[in-house]
Length: 290
Image (cartoon, rainbow, N blue to C red; front, side):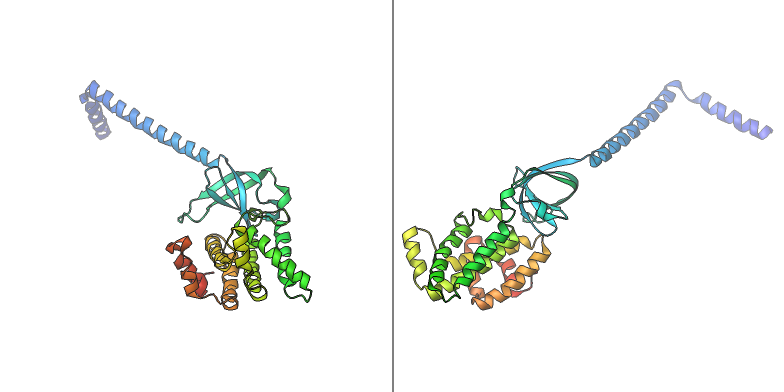
């Protein structure tokens, strides 16, 4: 008991020895620490609240695949959004997306991936819903005309060749649609068919492309190279975010290069897109990509 009293007296003597000013300083420091802890805690709660708040992204649908759409906002930044029913999102439609998480891409060529629990069409472009089917039907029909015994159909195919090239490279129309009205997957198929039609034009109507280039002022006699370049450029872009379409496009190109005698030297001479694409193009040409 005496020992406890001695210890208590030591503690009392200790506090008696502390100056009042020192005590105030200790209290002040404790208050400052408490305030800092409160501020940090409040900021953390605020950040968590912001993360839970919906960010509304506004843009226009510029492409879509089997399980995604790609929208472009007013600053021309592209975003990839997973969707389950891509047929409900016509190309060219304006949308608002309530964004969940955003994954910034490492490659500038790759669209930013986001998740969204709500994609609402604010301005639906309904007239292009059947564009993919109608464009491919038109081009397949044109290609078949060359196999017909009917000379008039071959002549029709010859005239359609101008329409197809204008559609692909000169902002032309087919069935009231422009190139921007079809998906990238359909563009690849259209380019593949166009390459076949170009080859048939050479076989059935030699010199025809030179004559229409002279009369129209547009370049038709270099169409093969433009088709190849467009196909490779589009495939390179799709390979950054659509593995399934990338694989199909790369496999198709293996068949195309044999059918239409596309050599690596042919591709190397396509320098308008810059040498930075040659590595990706070689991977597609060799079948290593996809």
